[in-house]
Image (cartoon, rainbow, N blue to C red):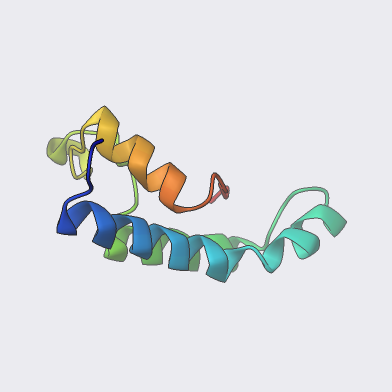
Length: 86
């Protein structure tokens, strides 16, 4: 079976922690018609960029880390299948 590298585990752990930090805002977003205040979304986008979790399917020339499809899939599974909008 395929084993995760140390970097893959780090990416998973980082993604899981980030998603766990924004899940509490889901109720606020739902009560506001699916929209969060712009300053909140800007803060989360900046944090995602800082953590290397933003635009993961994009090349470095446009700000992405150029992850492979496998890295993207492992990150999503590492976040427990949870996703969040920015």
